[in-house]
Length: 342
Image 1 (tube, rainbow, N blue to C red):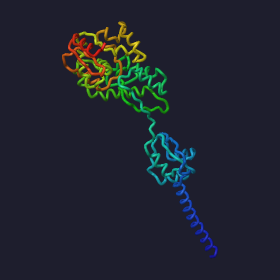
Image 2 (image 1 turned 120 degrees about the vertical axis):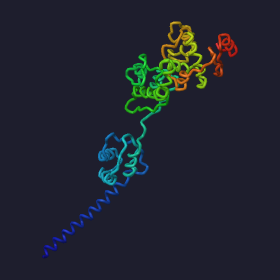
Image 3 (image 1 turned 60 degrees about the horizontal axis):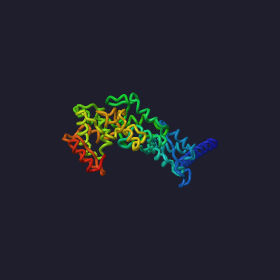
Image 4 (image 1 turned 180 degrees about the vertical axis):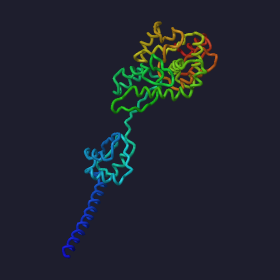
């Protein structure tokens, strides 16, 4: 009987001791899961959640990178957070954060890996290429080579075999440079933006103009460079289309700058104006130039599609960029003398 009582006592002692030990262990784990590993002023560092990472795997990585002291504490916290859903990407963490704070941070939107790239209205492919190379994102010529091969890209309209000049919409794009910038990705986005901003909304209207999409784009590229005021581009479009239809030379000097290494090189520009063999010399050659001379905005594209009907056949700009149209050569020459434009 005494042995039985002793056994019962020992059993009770073991059970109670186990319960106490378990409770202590629970409290220790709970305390550890709430505590920060380092001081409150620990530096902020970037921790990356790889796509498809599990909660347990993140605990090991957080421990290895010094954000938490014990992976077991992380596992205990996970059991209390069944809805834990980390976002793939880079996150700012500190060893001074508690595990719940780390868990909350990993479920927020990750840091943006995108960088802004501003493509200016009227830029040529070569201008965009130079800007990307200046940032160190590409080797010189990479963007230009990709944009010259239209077969590599998709659009809801036929792409010209000569390349994508004029069809890559000028806009501020946020691009990913982590892991290497890919010019093809940007080019496809620029094509998609052209389709979204202009082609799809105006597809039916385009068909009624009697002009091809390519003709509209070429005209719009000239308007972008010729007329600084968007509200006046329909007036200029009316003059230029009229000259096309009448078989007159356009006389758009901006086209002679297209093939210059430096658009603003005046010496080379004046040489181009005298070069009768230059296919982009619209003083000497009748009709549209062989292709667009830059990237037009939607304002220029719609102006090319909706030319204003009027009696004018010539135009010029004074020193303040004010447009002065005229009906005939005599009026035009008088305006040139008045505003000293030659």
